[in-house]
Image 1 (cartoon, rainbow, N blue to C red):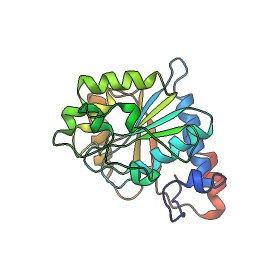
Image 2 (cartoon, rainbow, N blue to C red):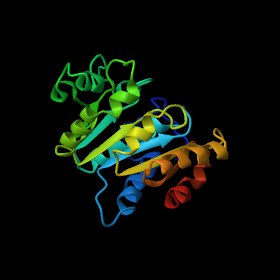
Image 3 (cartoon, one colour):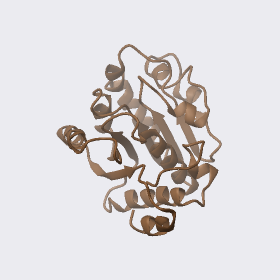
Image 4 (cartoon, helix red, strand yellow):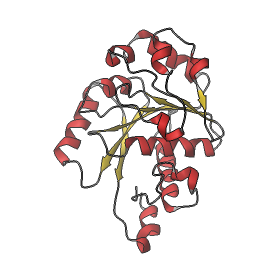
Length: 227
């Protein structure tokens, strides 16, 4: 993806849907759809080797583009250690996924509407002492099965693959994984290591996004044509 110049950073697909960056996110959406001809891709996880590579920004904008296409979309924050999705969409996080998994609330009580029609957010909720156990629980699997009945597309934000096992657990619940790589920030060996970790748990890697690429303005159009 080209480096974003919008100060809000994050949701350029909402702030400036006609920009080259927004077009790149729509291209990513299309490429995901074309990556599987014979089976539907309903659940997608965005992964990265390390933190700060643009994973949350990518998944937030991808969620918006799916909703702009008319899909009913749910963005789940399964980073139960350092959640960020609630700040991106300015929704509360005092209750959320962990509140549901701990049987304190029903999921319908913690789902949040956003300013984008058709896009709901399920924030992480209070940080638990046992994130991996919660994400790997039968309750999590059952919750996802129920949500798949309600939404066309479900997207997952997760912690970095090399930091904790949480992302690998979520990858086993998804139809596909997109690996985000920040240009010039992460070493090639670490990207390969993250990819190997995902492959070890049989995650289906749909492709990769090279993020924060410096592209001269007069080459933006050419860049988009080749994303």
